Amino acid sequence: MSTSSSVAAANPLAGVQVQEKLTRQNHAVWAPQVLTPIRGARLEGHITGKTAAPDAEIESKPSKDGDDAIKVPNPAYEEWFATDQQVLGFLHSSLSKEVMPQVATAKTAAQAWSTLQTMFASQVRARAINTRLALTTTQKGTMLVSEYFAKMKALGDQMAAAGKPLEDEEMVAYILNGLDADFNGLVSALVTRVEPISVAELYTQLLSFETRLDLQQGGSNSSANIATRVGRGGASNRGFPRGRGGRGHSTGRGRGQHQQQYNSNNQQRANSFNDTRPLCQVCYKRGHLASDCWHRYDENYVPDQKLVAAATNSYTIDTAWYTDTGATDHITSELEKLSTRDKYAGNDQIHTANGAGSGHEEYHP
Image (tube, rainbow, N blue to C red; front, top):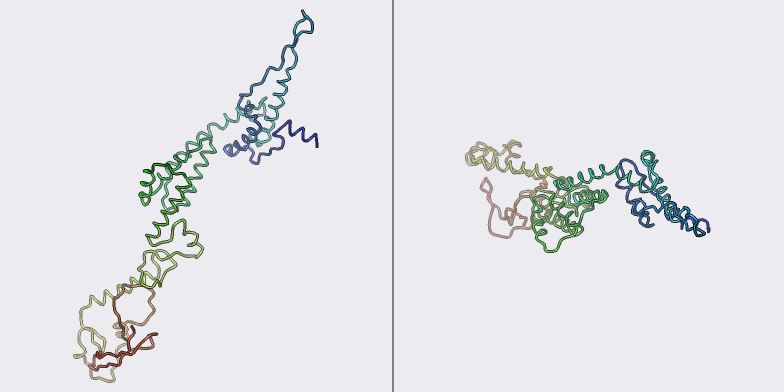
């Protein structure tokens, strides 16, 4: 127990393990893993060169007057050298096989560190430049705020890993620069603020603004609603006509079955309105009135069912929504089609094509 304790005290880096060994691609990840324990042990001067090596030998005082001074090993150098070799050994343990030959001839920790920094300096510089260009040119486009913010935050983290961390104010400027025109109102409000906004607060503001835009457009495509939309397996109807009562919705986006039916019904109505010829109520043919119909007094005449279907509306369940006509009462000759009906108690009558009238119809309010 005492032996292990003395070893740990003599070498503060003895028990430190570096998870990510240095390769030619991961210098940005490797560097902080190595620097942190070295700084914690107060040994950074050994890799930067600030903790210079003392003289290896010193002159000792002569034992007698007249004797020449002799050189003896310097205890301070021996202590420095032992510590420096511990740091060098720690660096060696953090290198991969492909990088290790580059520093195999280094005698001190400072030499090894300098070789590594020179080796990766151009790579780190190029990465920082490319990352800054990406921050400048990245646009939100069709991404959600959460997706866009995550991408920009990742680029900011890459700058920090390259040794060029960004201040909040600079990061906010990059994020605002990539927003589309829909966010101009928010951008104008933020740039005129007296107090600067933090990156975390900006994220909250963007999410809130995106949700408001999405609600105004009648959809559910904001970052706040995307999880709910995906979980339900569909999206609310966007761009479709809406009626009263809250019924009717589609699980698809764009032009679905409901939209096609809506357009088809509108086309049928338009065609019937454009034909100004009179419609016979006996044979259901256009071009003459019931009073002039050949089959007016023919009790055995049965009109063509195709013409009847074309002249009358078939009773189908229409899931599309239309503008309210404002009608308060509805009548029908097929009472079984109405689930709610009341007997008419007024004095008005309804006359059919044969002139017969009735005051006993039932109506549906």
